[in-house]
Length: 191
Figure 1 (cartoon, rainbow, N blue to C red):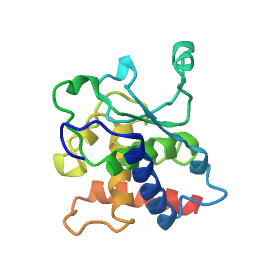
Figure 2: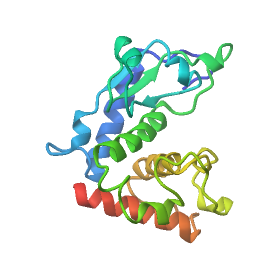
Figure 3: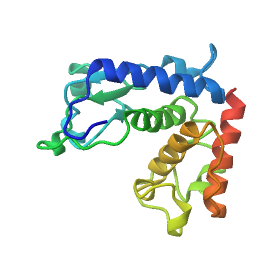
Figure 4: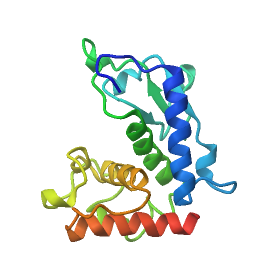
């Protein structure tokens, strides 16, 4: 995305279709996949409580959320990010959608991710923990992944989808490789 630009509905739709094609290639987009029920909505602004969100996945909704049209289990892409008032700085829109599909994968397959006995061992904490895990810097795919286990999962999932499941050669950290393998195994169970 060009910095300083507002995201359009057309751009959101095009990026969504592209990412759904990637999900198809790795085995997560098929007639029986729960991810096919995830809608991607373009919205003018993010929720006030997520004023800096480039995109967000609704885990649950309050009465106020429902009043404004938000529904649990879906992805929202705001046209304008409130915390970036003077300069809409974003990364790749497809990466944002890939990341949010990571949250959707966990939400729609909690038995494979959220309640998996191995998740905590691999990602260093409970999926919903807001405490960052204690791993060396190289065990994370990005700086944002260090913030909490659910973001670590979504960030790793994002790169997994972007790379069609092929682990980058530069990744040598055993813990990061274990995260990659965990995601691959859970995808295989769905595909």
